[in-house]
Image 1 (cartoon, helix red, strand yellow):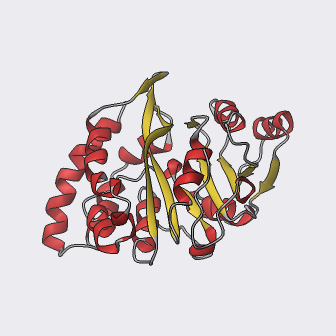
Image 2 (tube, helix red, strand yellow):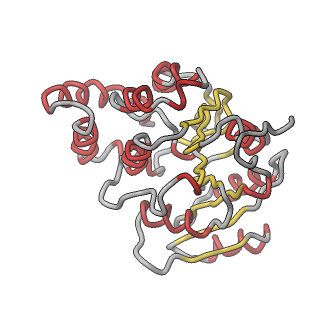
Length: 273
């Protein structure tokens, strides 16, 4: 499919990088790598980690990946920021080690990014992997698609008010589906301190900037939900509610934020195994 020219120079396949943020010894890491290697549009892949081990290094060697070790502070936010810095390309997708990406992911994201003059981030619809099965619909996925419905209109993707209203009632953007357009963004994307809402906090800050939140409405990746995943562990953590409340307070008076948080927490229950 041809790439659409914009007023700025169009992004090319060589401008795109996948960064896999590896942690400890995930049994799903190789499946993630294979899905990125099988992209219809070949894209460079690099691996970053703050927990180097034989498993990760074996995968790096097997697939001939560029490899960087974060020897500074660890943690999710620090690891994601490190991976973001290590990518020398204009746009980058921070791939999560447990997830898989459809062969057309990079090609479709690049095409959509090139439809806008000043894209900030691009993100896709997604499915889940539960007990080895691909799930396309459930209560949580349906709610997120409803929340993102306004962004099906290309013009609305460029309107700050609309994307902030969407984020004011939760974060429907799937973090591992997000592609970051570096030249339109700050040097540091993720702020340490949060555990569950690192990504939501980032999208809230970026939503204030001029530019587009590019929404690819096709299901282009699958996010794995399993009992050892960070998503599941975070939802079961009592600090989740506190962080959600703090995020809602960025958009609403405290009493309104408390009401929204109560119903939002119930909606997250479907993420549990």
